[in-house]
Image (cartoon, rainbow, N blue to C red; front, top):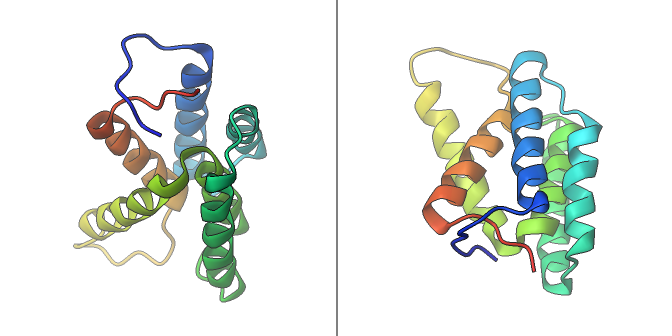
Length: 137
């Protein structure tokens, strides 16, 4: 659930720092670190919602299919699944915005490998700004 926040708590700061860490690390190394995923997963488990679990299963099955076909790395599968456990239905706008950002940034150059975690981070922050900060509880 996204609502406008007037002040940040430690969970929001940990979430923002984890996203930034995952996105920048993936941009430079094409590896998504498990430490950032564990931090997002810990926040998601502290605020567990069964409704979000449905979207996590759907997201996992879709991304697992692409991983099996060699279209994305397993770090992206773990990252999107952990993120969907936290933000629920908003994972689908995040994925759509990520795809749009990838298309817009790679129109002139032909790139075979794209750091998906970086674009997911950017799209989550864009959604974060337009929908309000993610408030947990």
